[in-house]
Length: 203
Image (spheres, one colour):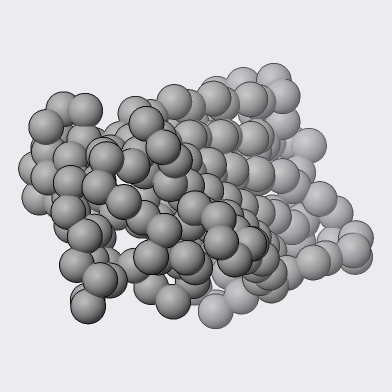
């Protein structure tokens, strides 16, 4: 994903969270199905990138004492996942159930003039399955930060941004971006939204 983010022009590289249970598997077979979409406005810095990841596995073992579920993917990779307190109705999970995880990540980058309304910060929401139902959880979180344009090098198609922590970073803009439209002091907004849904279903 990081390589694709670079195509947006003036952007910052931020870490991307992995699927909840894929981190518990060392096999390359655990790699989820990934789809990506990038949308840009020709001539303008920034853009929108959306990436979705999907993974499905079958429950082959359950340790209720440690709340650990053993699963096998379609590719034959073994996964051990320890369910946290947010996974309600753990006792409803049975051997043979299908566990499906879908994660969507969206990065929006755009420039604006100083003084326009800002919503820097973070927000999140968590929704769990009702009591008695098969376990399911959906989470979503959004983080937004604003950097200021410190300098613009039109000849070399570069711009240096200063972030809230005082650190500066220089970015290479896309060739089609007209940097003469921007000025020192302009703001560049980075908005990252991550949503994940994990559900347990009968096969």
